[in-house]
Image 1 (spheres, rainbow over the protein chains, first blue to last red):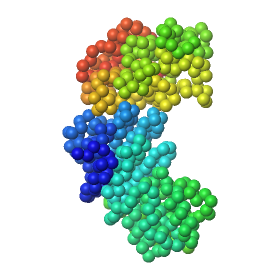
Image 2: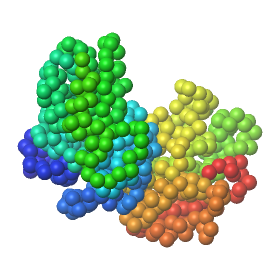
Image 3: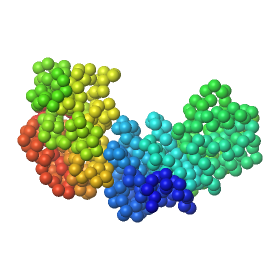
Image 4: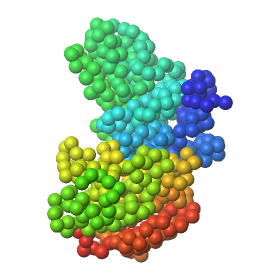
Length: 311
Length: 236
């Protein structure tokens, strides 16, 4: 029997078809291994936590469709010494109860927030179910760790990391994933080149790899964006012929720009920001791929933008 | 004056006066003073020595503004030194016009924004229950004006439905809610499954009786009525 999160982490991987499955199964197992882990839900993903709730009825709480209460409840649970995991669709998790999230810091309480739906996974529901603002919002609050996994296996590792700390953590799950998992932690060097550095976050990786396949650039991959791995970015930028940086984020364009600028404060540099557009409210349904094209986040658009930018 | 268990109810006006600068203590008759005194003197199982014990009773002051009575009771009961009261709300004082749990021993909740105490109380009870701690009580003080915030009603509904016996809401009712609560505040709790009592908020015997009333398998709401001409009569 597994009796700690470390043992669970060492026990090896299961195959997960998507991040949501990776999340619910990993946290359900973690509840068996660690009596501090609790789950707070608001009528989303309750069937997936049904078995865990049957085994641990006092540690799985569904508050109903009450997102303010969901965060407040998790805060209270955390203040008793437990490690609550709070989950619903990202827009309802991060924006309706934003003051409650802000006040977690005021109370000195730490929880793990796990949002699903990323910027626009649930496109057929339209704008209310989109959350491209989420990472920027957490960026206004000190002390939050922000994970943006690009693969179900990364999601599992990052969740276990989150459960082992007592930090405030936001995990941004997406229906969209890259073909392969990569090491988590700091920014990973996936390709090395001379003409510039492309920093790509989470599920944008595969489109970036396709877009830059013929280009002589370094590709850095981030599944954790806060803390921001300044050392890896600066090292990559200084190793290239030109201090030209392309930042590709699956949420609001330019969300991490101030971190890039702080990283390169002594390096005159150029920066191309790609991400979800801020300038217009896009009222459209369709598929996530349609929205990628609308925001210039498909492989073809990224390739064209990067070619125009590089010297 | 040193922090001491020996300080009593009659010492509170002098302590409040150190905060208000009101040497005649006229403003010490705040809406919360009597409730707070009864709670800390006769109801809550918590002391400076057990302020970090996992089995302590928790008191969450959700309605954090006008905390003079609260700080005075904490000083009278030895949680903070009475000397701290003199420099309150200065940059380096742990005591501000809204309490901060990170700064003050014995303060269980950082307050200021209204409507957060009851959700925190629900979570605290659930966290205690998950650890088989069925004895500690969690008492949340809210104002009748504060009940305007919808987050309270999310918590009232869930606490009633889950039968959170360890949770008590004390509603200071000084009739400040702009649009009022026709039919009574207590009924809004009762209909959600709470044991709900209304008492005179200045009557120590009645307050003690209500706050210690049996309420098996349901949360308890005590509505403390305050005559509206008291000094804090117009605070939520």
